[in-house]
Every structure is written in structure tokens, then in C-alpha cells.
Length: 441
Ligand SMILES: CC(=O)N[C@H]1[C@@H](OP(=O)(O)OP(=O)(O)OC[C@H]2O[C@@H](n3ccc(=O)[nH]c3=O)[C@H](O)[C@@H]2O)O[C@H](CO)[C@@H](O)[C@@H]1O
Ligand SMILES: C=C(OP(=O)(O)O)C(=O)O
Image 1 (spheres, rainbow, N blue to C red):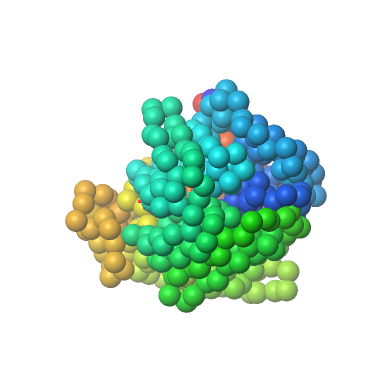
Image 2: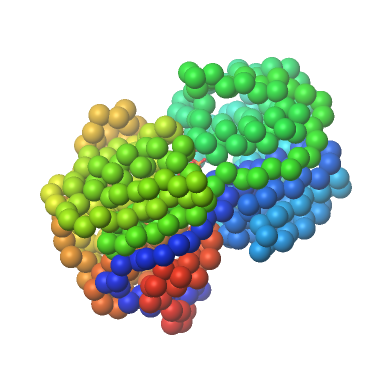
């Protein structure tokens, strides 16, 4: 069961909100804390469901967790790590993608790991074959069963050479979290280099790891025997910041996103400007606004960093429904990330999906049966509708669409958004939005 939100749209969002640490970094730094011999303190921790899930998993493994949610300070003491009870792990089955990253640290600490069914957004198959192959390369034995994956390392973990078929964020993190204490040197080719991964490398280096990153996507890790706990302030959430930017554009609004930082958002900011949005980079955040006049259509292709992030795509598509002319969007990271447009169509958007690639970025989906390209004809005024959140970013996009639309919409399944957007309702109210819970779906 999840809550339904009543949204009275048609009013520009105005005001200031802030973002804290990144959803796609903080849970990984929490997992890294398992490798330390002393406690780790993380600052700038957002109050989101994915952080709660990892806290529960760490607690189940004997980590002492002390969390000041308001201050965003999390202290994790891994000195008595132990195997978790299966019932505790099973209770978290399907709640997040992070459990797969426990493998390396648990193998180092305990010699075995059990990984339940993963959760996360349904954006396609989301296989874990790269993860499992990576673990095997380090010397682990992998036993896949219906209830989850059992992993052991009877002969320890040893440095290796890994070449990823695609620069997977999760598989790169898997390699880092395993290699830092594996015996010998690991070379990872074809690595993902997202800023959240670079911040994980910062954490691991502070803990005592030896890691170098080359510009050709090669990461080299020299295994060390011991790592210690650290104090670290998480990098800000560039996906949340961009989502608010898209909300400003779609609602003709003017938002200051405190805590947003320019360097990791360069590609988003370029695109935002091409669509016709304006932004102002300040010392403590970024102001995003609709300057008036017409928005412009664009050709947009998602890609791994430093390309346009797939997680930025869904919120920006809502603004593209208001651009004058045809926009083309080619999703090259996930095969199935356009399910959310059904609700936008219901609200009046003119969006067609295609199996063919509409751009030039090399893409794994062109010859297959996936609707991974979108053609958006704008501008189409959006009208209110009753809609249901399909996934995290798709859900935020629905919220933006409801805020931009004239009339009263009901957005069901709204709780899913708290997996990655901290206090989004109170932030919306601060921006003058009319939103209220009206029940359960
Ligand atoms: C919690 C977290 O940080 N989530 C982010 C992470 O997800 P996640 O780490 O799951 O995403 P990946 O980068 O691994 O996935 C990218 C592509 O590789 C494929 N793949 C991945 C692993 C594997 O073993 N086999 C395989 O085929 C996936 O199906 C997908 O098509 O990076 C994505 C890409 O920036 C973001 O959209 C997610 O928000
Ligand atoms: C796809 C996302 O997350 P996850 O990998 O946690 O499903 C996301 O943050 O948009």
C-alpha cells in the first residue's frame, strides 16, 4: 500500500530548497565502512529510504549504527561484524540494489555472503552478470539459488584483470570494494567513472586503499591488508538537483537549489540552456529558472559519464513536452526507461516511442525489441489526471507533470519517490506547491 497525493497544478514553483548527499553515493560509502577496522563517520547523509535499507542491512550484520537524521551524520562501527540472520536479510529482499555491493566486504570480513533478491527501479532486466563474473575473477565461488546468491571465497580473494563489456556503475563499485583488500593488483578496464564512483574512491583512499584512475577508463587497485574508518562528507545529489531544475522549467518557475554544484552537472547545464532554461551558479548552489518565452526542442542521448545521465532523462522529458517542435530522446543506458510517458500522454503530451535508435551514440538496444527512443512533439498543454508512479525518477516526473498541469491530479504510489528524494513534500510546500496526502492506493 502506498500514499496518494493530491496535486493542484498550474502554478510556477518559486523559492529555495536544498539537496544533501547523493543517493547513488551514500549507501555505497556505508558499505565501504564494513572494510574499516575503526568506525566511519559520514556527513551530509540524506534522509531517504535507500539509506534506511542499508542501515538495516548493516545492523543485521552486527554494525553499530548511530544516525542523527536531522544533522545528516551517520556513524558506523564495524568492529563486531557477523553473519546476518537470514530472516533479517529476507525482510529486505527487493528493497534496493545495494545488497549486491556487500559481497566483497563480507567475503573479506567473514569469508561468505548471501545476497537476497535485489530491488531498485524496473528499467529493464538489470542483470548482475558482470558483478558475479567479477567476483569469480577474484576467486569467489558463486552459487545462484531461487532465494538469492550464496558467495564464498574458500581460497581468499586475489587481484585480477577485469574488462567490463559496458561501463557499469555497480560492477565498477563491486570491483573497487573487492579489490582494495584482495591480495595483489587488480586492473579494471572499461570502468565507469561517474562522480559518485570518484567519491567512493576518495573514501577508500582515505581508508588506506591505493587506487589510480586513468583517463582511458582503466582503474588500478593495489590490495592492502588493513583499512581504517574515516570521516567523509558526501558529494551532493546531482540527480535531485537536476530534477528540481527540470521542475522549474516545466512549471515556468524559479528555484534556488542550495548545495547543488556545477562541476558534476556540466552536461545537464549545457542541455538545460539549449532547451531555453536559464541558470545562475552561486557559491552555495544553483538557481534554475524559466526566463519566459518559448522552450526549444533538442536531440538528447543518454550516456555514461561524462554524458547526459539516464537518471536526468525522465524529469527533463516533462519540460520537453513544452518545447516548440520535435525533440528526440535516445535512451542508451537502460532498455526500458520510457514507461513513465504513458501518464504524460494521458495528461496531453504527444510522445511516440520507437525501437530504432534515433541518435548516433553506440547503443546495445537498436537491434532488439525495446522501445528506447522517444519523439516528443511540443508544446502540448498538460491537463490534470489520475496517475500512478512507475519508478523513482519516473515518479518525480509525474509529480512535475502534475504540478505543471492545470487542475487537480491524483498521484498514486507516491512513497516510491522517498527512495531518492529527501523530504520532497515539505520541499514542494516551501516552493508554494499545493500538495496533500489524500489516502492510500
Ligand atoms: C544505486 C545506483 O547507483 N544506481 C545507479 C546505477 O545503477 P546500476 O549500478 O545498477 O547501473 P549500471 O551502470 O550497472 O547499469 C548500466 C547498464 O549495464 C547493464 N548491466 C549492469 C550490470 C550487470 O551486471 N550487467 C549488465 O548488463 C544494465 O542492465 C544497464 O543496462 O547506475 C545507473 C547508471 O548511471 C543509474 O541509472 C542508477 O541510478
Ligand atoms: C535507477 C535509479 O536507482 P536504482 O539503481 O537504485 O534503481 C535511479 O536513482 O534513478
